[in-house]
Each structure stands twice: as structure tokens, then as C-alpha cells.
Amino acid sequence: MDKRNQSTVTEFLLLGFGDLHNFKILVFTVVLVIHVAALTANVLVIVLVCVTQSLHSPMYFFLSQLSLCEIVFTSNIVPTMLWLILVGHGNVSVARCICQFYFLGVPVIAQCLLLAAMSFDRQIAICRPLHYPTIMTFMHQLLMVFSCWLLGFTLTLFIYISLSKLRFCDLNTINHFFCDIAPLLQLSCSSTSSVELVTAMVAFPVILSPFIFIIGSYISIIHTILKIPSTSGRHKAFSTCSSHLIIVCTYYGTLFSIYIVPPRDNSLNVNKGLSVLYTLVTPLFNPLIYSLRNQDIRNAVYKYMQSFRLWKVVL
Image (cartoon, rainbow, N blue to C red):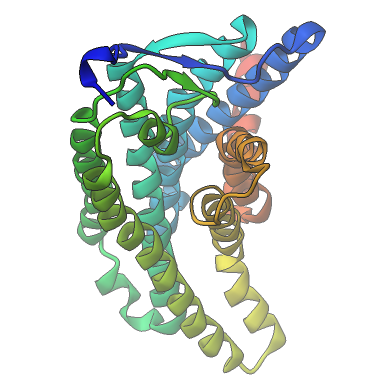
């Protein structure tokens, strides 16, 4: 194709969910309520871990960072989703679109690594309890968390730089509610081989390696738990990591469904549905799972609720 006849694209048209007609306000309200609830739940987890002495342990420190990932992720995607629900579709600049993908990739990578760090913490706590205090020191926790975030920002930057070098011309329509990498590659009128190579070199090791590590950790954990003679002892040991296991299954199940499973004819609508689940429900689901299944967090919430009631009585 003659490049002189191609018009350079400076903006993309996000189609969002199309025209929702009379359901626009209802859908907007539901999405907004879920988003606010998710933000509130994750902020509450971070605050509780910071101010409650009984929650100053590696497991809860990693959990607070997991909540921070969810806050960064949803705050990047949901405002655009709400805007598109109201207006039906909207324009976004190419630079802003690529930037949105960058802040999508950072928490995704960080969360994959944090889930692996949490499985390592549970493995040491159950399989090597006597060495736990010397292995999971506060400095080691900080180093692990810093590494997760650093790799998230750094590795996603490589993809961001390669995406920034792409040319976009003529076609500018993205049938989605945020800027993901697949539609960006489809719309590019320049070679995408370098982007695909960089993405593969980053995504497969960073997403699959933690998942394989988590599986290996749980094989070791289950093997150790089965050696515990008492039923109550086995139940207590497994209950300390059951919440993490549920979150791992939910997170990786959705992630693989969106990015790993080969596309089908109706994959676009399915992908949108899974992306809504991944963007709205999962960030709310994670803190609720830990809150409902964890006695320490429930006690901390109850303690501060009681303190708040006493404070209101005094006033």
C-alpha cells in the first residue's frame, strides 16, 4: 500500500459497550457502586494492615500490596469505562491509549509476582516453620515487594517503548472499553513483529513462571500437610493458605481466558465480558475473600467498628 495515501491516526475511537439505550443510567450506577465498593475494600485492607499490630506479618503485608495493585488497576480502567457507558463511544489520543496500557501492565505483572511471593511465604510458614522468622524478615519482605513493583514498571516499559514506535493510519476503531495490546497491534500499519517479540519475552516468563512456582509451592505445602497426624492440625494448616489459593485460581483463570486461550468467532464479546469480570468483580472479590475467611482481619474490623461506636457515644 502506498504510504502517501495513508492518513496518520492521532486518535482512537473506543466503542465501549455500544448504545445501551434506556439501561445507560442503570449500568453506570451498578458499575460505579461496584467500583467504589472495590476501592473502599482495598483501601480498608491497606489501612488495617498499617495500623493494626496483629496484622504486621508477611502475609498481610503482601496482601496490602495486592490491594494496592487492584487500586492502580481499577483506577486506570474504570473511569474510562464509566465515561463510555454515558457517552456510548469516545475518542482517546494514541499517546494516552498506549499510556493506559502501560498502567494496565504494571499492576498485572506486579500482582503475578506478589502472588508467587505469597505462596513462598506460605510454603516457608508450613514446610519450614522453625526457619520462618529468619527467612521472612522485614527487610526480605521489603526487598521482595520492591522487586515485584520494580519489575512491573521496568518490564512493562519495554513493551511501552516498542508500542510507541508503531505507526497507526486509516483505521482507528477499537471495539473495547480500554486500550489493550491486541487491538493496538491490529490497527498498526507498520510491522508489529518487534512488539510481539518483546511482549512474548516479557509476558510468558513473568506470567507463567510465577504460576509454575505457585503450583510447585502448593505441591510442597500439600505434601507437608498430609504428614500432619491430626485432622484439626491439617485443617488449620490448610486454612492459612486457602484464601490465597482461591485468589490465585480466580486471577489466573481470568488472565489465561483473556490472553492465553486461542480466540474464537465470538471471542470479542466473551473477551469484553471477562474483562468486565477482571476489572470490576475480581478487585472486590479479593479483599472480601480475605476478610470473610480470615479471623485476624475480621477481628481488626470489629475492633475499629467498636472504637468508632464508642467515639460517637462520647461525642
